[in-house]
Image (tube, rainbow, N blue to C red; front, side, top):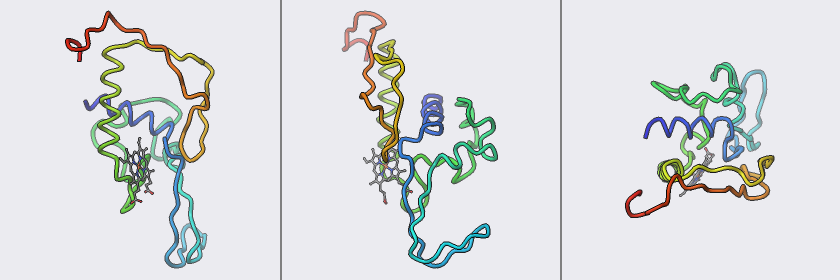
Amino acid sequence: MKYSWNVASEVMRLFPPVDGTYRQALKDIHYAGYTIPKNWKLRWIPASTHMDPAYFRNPEAFDASRFEGEGPIPYSYVPFGGGPRMCLGIEFARLEILVFMHHIVKLFKWDLVNSDENFKYGTLLEPPKGLPIRLHPHTTIDSDKRL
Ligand code: HEM
């Protein structure tokens, strides 16, 4: 399901489900003219590289083909973080997302109950009203035959 994963990846590039986390400097760090003193906490956010045209051409545009071939360069696409503390659940999340996408696309058309519902970041990207949707089965569902 490579194409489906490319689509999901592009959604997470534009709207990272986690808006960022922290790292703590174990020693003084000098970077790009700045000094980050030992013990200071740094907040990193996926959007800083996800929306950087140096890494993603025309970053505002939805384009799942960015993930074809080699895909983005390492550490530019980081919805699951990176390095030794990267998300442990990435493969499980991938499985859940692909299974969900497969069933919803195969079985239903759908639309939003609140077409103007926006998303807000707490730590996670969340729809304030829970994003209710209306499901319209493609045909009468005989679940044994269609799944
Ligand atoms: C779309 C789904 C998910 C996204 C976008 C996501 C994103 C993230 C991010 C950004 C981090 C911080 C990584 C870092 O600091 O470098 C993280 C950590 C973590 N995630 Fe996820 N996650 C997802 C699903 C899951 C699932 C399904 C599980 C478990 C079943 C999970 C378990 C964890 C754990 C245990 C950590 C902490 C890892 C550590 O500190 O060593 N995540 N996740």
